[in-house]
Length: 548
Image (cartoon, rainbow, N blue to C red; front, side, top):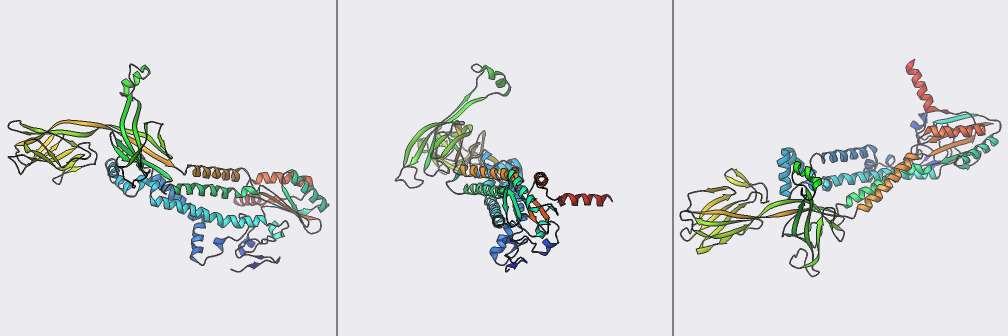
């Protein structure tokens, strides 16, 4: 991998395709080619040079365009799978068990698989973050592998080039003129009028403009890297929070993603349109029923005291009271708590009383808190009821055992043990809504008296410190897109040959029509030799060959 010496005497790094000094082809492939590859000015790239160490192999792997495209395809495919079913954010569930049950109930086995593979929260899954990291690594390495040699080549490009370099350009012409010095002088003047940067050296002209457009893809990559960096930062604590919190009336809970803060639901309020007060909604109300005018949650925000340990909720300091309304979130220390959803009339508690069947004698009432039930309820005359088991969302009998669908008290059922003075060993009874089962004929029964309900507020907790990073990345990305799309790098070489000959060559990374149009102006003004566009010539010859 030693340097390779050109015929002009310049030593080029191993892997160089075109001599940095004169432009002579340095590889057998370049020497056989009719047109030279000018994408990276024929400079040596690290990925095509070093292949010994593990670092070289990693570099070469990620610098490959095929690998980069494969990673992009993987990201797109997984993102497409992530849209098959709703993401976690849009699932009406309280706990992870509810989420799993939701996918299984609605989508069956595909839903279970979707949940187990992490597609339900895809953008926070480790494998998706790994793909994003690999994509960023590929972009960084591929960019450095190309932009550094390209920058060095363009910075030190020579004005006068060897004939083999000129003749291998797509636009090339050679011919005699009356006076080479006069033609070169006129060409210089015209090129400057066309806003080219002109360099003159030893009877040769290099006219160049729009070089900055060559950096467009790399500016584009820089913006994309910044954007992906912002996406990866969302996985770090404190940078991005997007959590769902279901809060019942009268309940206080820690705010997820906001350590040290607690929120208490004082009251939930819903307001409907009425036909009497809002006549414009009369037809709609008749057609669809109730129409919500406003719903809000009145909350109290607390913060742990300075001397409290983390999670010590008995030492809280009042922060403020606030009414969370749709599009009017609770704001504090960079966090926003939005009103997202609600559920009405969830069962809060159920009241029962114990009676003797034969005499209807009552031993008193007891109330079961469905969120935190007590194990024993003491009644009159020494009687008591023991709660042996509790099924918040009763879903029938399976293998001889009652089962529950979720921990939410949608359809509560209980197994009670009734203990009285004449039945010290107690009697067992299974009590559900509109259903009572006994293992044997009991003398006593637990009867339903009443139920209390409460509303639940669905809140979303959000914090995003990466927003400005993503915005910056997006702006830089679009600058790079514009830079590479609306401008192009044009170069024209004119130099003396033998006698009164002038050699003419031109290259651009795109928009050859505009280059030819400007070159025609220079040729006509300075009496330069005719040129040909070998791409058009080859296409014409191929068409004629096919037709013949």
